[in-house]
Length: 163
Image (cartoon, rainbow, N blue to C red; front, side, top):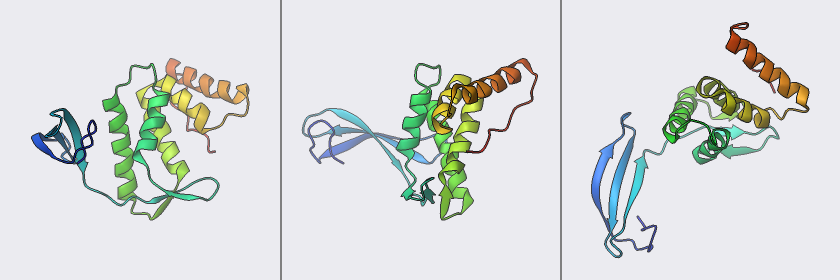
């Protein structure tokens, strides 16, 4: 493992801990060259289905891309990185359990929408506005009205419309 500071390959493991779920090992390392410490995470490489984009392109599942999108949606909201990581962990588990070789990107998008709906309504609306590519303010307002009705108890919850 290269030191992120001096790029030297020689380092030692100071501490190793298993995550609560038991699927990730966190290792604290110390570079033998510059003596700085850094953390690495080790997880088993798992086979995920290819993601079929709206235009037909196929690309591998990218956890970091999902995390980045959720971070943008949750920016300046009371949602911690732990909650975001937990959402992505659940999405990954669903993908693995599906057993499919390919899945449409809409499957991930809708799953993320459901997760955000329960996590933070503002982050949900932010994500929805990008994911659904609202054509005009009317569509955006419909989504907000549905959330307001749900909050007041007027509607038990509306299924997100298909894109």
